Length: 475
Image (tube, rainbow, N blue to C red; front, side):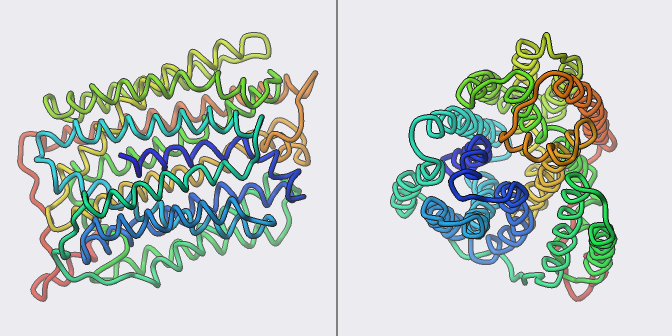
């Protein structure tokens, strides 16, 4: 719970620090975007590999190692001296976060029986929501009254205490099976995503040129090579054969679409509140916090509901609420925005509270016992895919409604919106929120795939063997 708490806090606390980082480190605006995207990207890439290491060496050992890297990365980020060092240390922080998030689900699955895991995931959902709430609130207070460095340094004392306690609480055994790391797959996936993300940001913030377009095409080609490579591997980075289990593939895809549609909401809301509404970082934090508080409260009950009624009902309630929240966001204008953002954020928090623990429980219940670690890692990876691309989607939203040279400045909070520019920006946001509502609706429809075969028992995918070498190549 403490690891997930810090993960939630690190997701939100850095958002309000970007303008201060720009001034303090004399940083280029485009480099600040990678403070956030770099963390998400390395977290996404390493999550499955960390899950595989958990299967090999035991999830608690990998969890403790991840906590050490997370704490060390936080310390170094707080001591950073220029934009390059901040981004580099954020990558180290993301590496530790990947180990923590990938193995936390496997630890819960090992400790709790299947009929109690929903409640356990509900408690971790509370931890994530509390972390996100404190991240927003503390971020506003720290930026307003202390120093941006404490946005990162605040993790250090918590990390030291947890590492000391974990030695006596978490006891890691040996792994259940031999696994290998798919370095080629991880490298090609990382290079492909990096090229594609860089191209999207360049195209969104400047006039499209041959280099960004070439990078986009190169990224797509690398991702195509990655898929072909994974299909040929006996022990791939992403075990596509697990998609043969409908009860597992549906929540994985739901996590992808939900992350893509939901992660941008926080950034878009902050852009609006600090732009057309002209709120300070602290007042912006106070306007956003109620939704996360409600999400944490709902998580306490939705996990138990998933244990008793199955995960489909709370997942459907959660995604339905998030669709309604995005539809509400799509109604904002320069006159009614503040109260509508607060109300929509509360509805969105209700959706998150139902969706997160129930969807996690669905994945771990459907995962074959020998692939619990990999399944937990794949859940984080697919959610991470959505998060990574949801972030530049927020920049594209600004670039479609206002001049490109001001989009990135408004995105990081270093420029104000007023007059006709504020109206144009708000009109653009309405179209983006409508698009996100459609993506969230797709996540809801995908979840109902779980109804197919609900009356028959899913056959688990057996571990690769000499007699079944083709199984891991089956998508």
